Image (cartoon, rainbow, N blue to C red; front, side):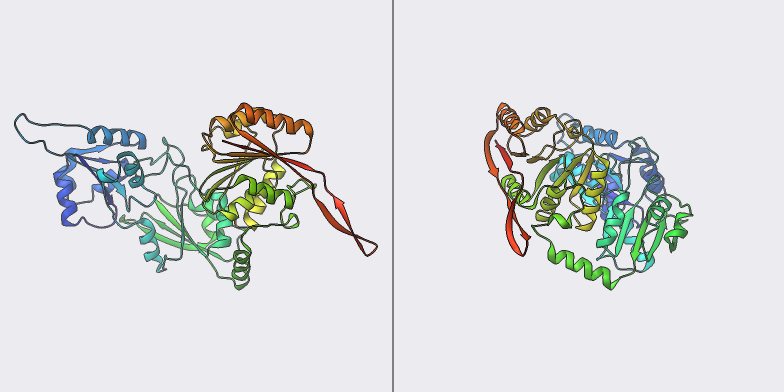
Length: 439
């Protein structure tokens, strides 16, 4: 059986076993940048004629797979396995090509031989421990962009973007970031200028002869330029008040936010009691994908993300003022599991992963299209939508049944106490029909 060795390069000489693998390999695959790095190794001259330089991730994977599935044998001789080496940057399993290689070829066919990671080296250079750091990658935007190569994550959607860093700094005092040409240190520092007491370290060209480490304030780094590749480390001065507030938020984490706690406008929010019943009817899984369509202020998304941190919550909303509320609430309640999708359903649903659960809070007159779009992507699952009118109730029942869902309807009437002349009276809210479709 042919075998793929994903070998990290950049910082240390190869050990004896790694040297043997490289010398015995049939072909070595490298990105243009890592080809230049590999030139510094003693083994390069011996194997340089076997090196294949490929820039695109997809072309790299395609080439490696074609080599892995090749069979060659001499008649009468035993079939010989062919070793293929794929060079990765640092530790290939840290935001690198190792993950993709295993996904494509399986664990049995791949061996990972890591070097130091750039993050490891960066923290060593600034003499800070990194076991308490939050690590993220902003590396990679376009496959055709500068420096694109098989050690990048260019085809994988990033879980965090540059605009999420202020939120992350609320939860973490130490953040390390893999950058790229677009999300560079100056841009990152400029986005964070309003953050108090943050020191920035930029570690450029680690492992290269021209390696350089720069430390400074956000304002200072925002005015500077740096060479690629580089790593950014953010150190926030610990603040007892911030830590106390974070601790309080963690203690309060769970189910049962109040309307008064959630940023919203004009009373446009799912009422507490209706929200509780909605979450119950959705029967959310601990892991999976949840679409909150017409998310409004994001109250349903907030409850879902706080209850199940590993659930992927997509809050789909078209109105900019509501999107601002969702962002504010996401930060306030540390609901990092929410991804905001700006746009109108069903068009905005096209590139989302298929859902396990769907809540339709607002259809914008396109309820039939939304239910149909969600239904065709759900071999099994639950859709819940709430209606304030008989017309919407009938429409929801019809479209859910047409898409193969078993339908249940619950009418919810809520009265809240109100004190008038020192006496409590019950004041009724508008009744709501809750329609649940299951298949």
